[in-house]
Every structure is written in structure tokens, then in C-alpha cells.
Image (cartoon, rainbow, N blue to C red; front, side):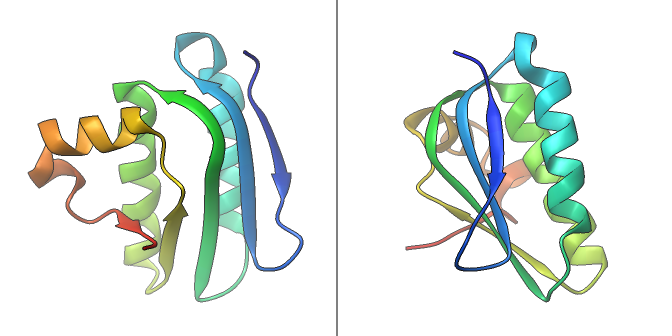
Length: 102
């Protein structure tokens, strides 16, 4: 399933849809670049349309989150797919800084 990204209409951030894996890494990288440049103290990343995130994609989210933290901002993840929750369980220390909305 191809990966697409579009701006959220109701708050600063992006909606991702599709699969984040080896084949879609360039698209994910470009989308996360846009997320990083989104202005505001809190930026939202809606993952409700994401069917799968591989470990490399989760690592990319961790790196982007570190960039936000370094800037004194927050990246909030919404509706994470099962695969993200599973990777977080497997690597709790590495993923501890990820903020997932309740």
C-alpha cells in the first residue's frame, strides 16, 4: 500500500496513510521533513491511516521526536497502529520519549 501524507485541517500536523516500510522510506522521510518544519509548540502526527510501521520507520519517529525536544517543542502521535505499539514494547528505552495521545 503506498504511503501518502496530507496536512491536518484542524491543527498543525500531518495525516499519514498507508504502509511505512522499506519501499516507502523516501516518502516517509519527506513527510517527516514537512512535519519537522511545521510551526508551533505542538505538532500532531495522525497515524490512524497507517497499516504498518517497520522498525526503521519507528526509529525515524524517534529521531524526529528528538529534534522536536531539542527545539523545546512536542510531537504528539495519534492512533498508532499495532506495529508501533509492538516495537515500543520491544524497545521501551529507545522509544520512551514518544508521546502518544490517549
